[in-house]
Amino acid sequence: MTEPEAEDRKPQSDEARSAFVPPAGVVAQPAPVEEESSTTSEFALPKGLDVPQVPATDSEGSAFSTPRTYSAKHALAAFTPPAGIPRVDLTKDVPWQDRMRTMLRMPVAERPVPETVQKTEDEGPAVPRVLDLTLRIGELLLAGGEGAEDVEAAMFAVCRSYGLDRCEPGVTFTLLSISYQPSLVEDPVTASRTVRRRGTDYTRLAAVYQLVDDISDDQTEVSLEESYRRLAEIRRNRHPYSGWLLTMATGGLAGAASVLVGGDAIVFVAAAIGAMLGDRLAWLCAGRGLPEFYQFTVAAMPAAAMGAALTIAHVDVRASAVITGGLFALLPGRALVAGVQDGLTGYYITAAARLLEVMYFYVGIVIGVLVILYFGVKLGAELNPDAALQSSNRPGWQIAASMLLTLCFAVLLQQERSTVLIVTLNGGVAWSVYGAMHYVGEISPVASTAAAAGLVGLFGQLLSRYRFASALPYTTAAIGPLLPGSATYFGLLAIAQNDVDEGLVSLTKAAALAMAIAIGVNLGSEISRLFMRLPGASAGARRAAKRTRGF
Image (cartoon, rainbow, N blue to C red; front, side):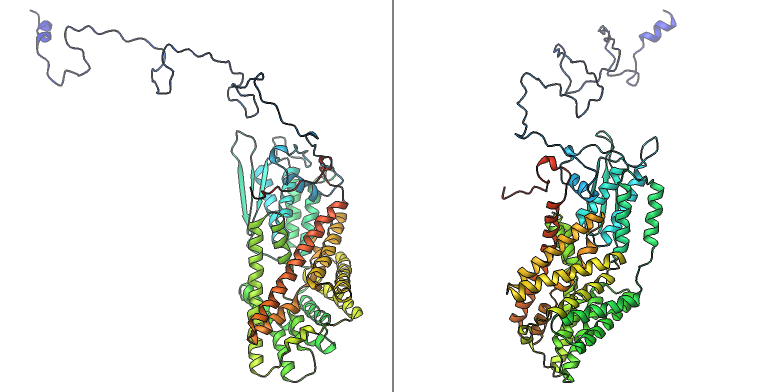
């Protein structure tokens, strides 16, 4: 026996054997030869079951391609409205605000493909830069007090002008966001920006509107670089009016408001001095970094102190008119109108935040005035709550005072000089309507205020559409004479004299007047659309947000 045969006959050790080696005498079956790995799955079809496969023309498929299980023979009947599918005609002869608002209020699937207005590079628009430019423009508009829907319309106009059609802007009180999806199979690009500082400068607001109008105009070519340059110039521009001129305008506003409620020359001077002192104290607090709540609290004290001091000194003047005039310069009418407008147009989160801000401002004013009135009553100031019943009917003086109040308010809002005269006349018309309805027609002050504010909103929207600009410079200052300064003061005075019930009734009346102003301005702006040619006119009516009604 040879040596290899002996090795084969030797018993193998446990390490040399394997559990997968067939034992001696068992013939192993050859494994089937497969071209690829035979990995199976529980979802794989069993052998012998043949399913006919339809050859696919597109490897990936599309959301717009016909499904494989679709059969035209058994398809359901398509639904078509009786009047047909409306065609949206985005005419070029209407302001871009109305065109973009129409786009925002329609479903995404029904929006027409945009016609790119501005030229871009051959490889397509620079998406990150377009989104950044859009957010910066929206930031200036939101910080300037513009409504959420108008901010979204401006952002939408900028994106579509540079060729980004699948974009969705979003606006809240402090956050701006925008999302762009290149196609149905690509990931969306999202950017956001936080608004941390707010300032009232309607000159800057008008410049931003002009920039958006040029970008959305097919006759004007504005590149991305040019848009950034103009936006930087807008941000760097100084306010048109100096700080001391603003202080003098605050005094003029308070003096004019005191004349509206029955004051004379002494009351005018006293109210103006108190308001200017409060404005300077507010500037000092702002320089120290104190929040606006404390600025309003401090600014409300000097006017109340001036009225209490005149009463203690037994000067024969209407102290209520002095304090009321000082309150007129502090009431946040701009924020109130913007908050109510956001709520009426469906932006409830932004509206709630704006109204909460207004409530904090009111609380600050209440605290400042109540502190002074409390100490004034303790020192012997004979402040008469029944003075609210002494109506003052001096049409000539009151119309002149209302126009002066509107003029000073326009200066405080940093409006363009070209709009100051128009808004001043609008404020005089508003007070004339209020006086004719309330003093002559003996209609309730809430209804009279709502009608006058509606007329202000109507004129403001028509003027803004005529100039392709924002409506705020034409409406905000004009509602100044209608602000509920006297109702607020007499409510606070009643609370300071321990008549809480009467004070709450007066404060409720002030709140009702404020809401009437805001709703009237918004209703007037909506009515103005009836007189203008709007995009989508072929659809029969302007599209608006559809809300559920109990179901």
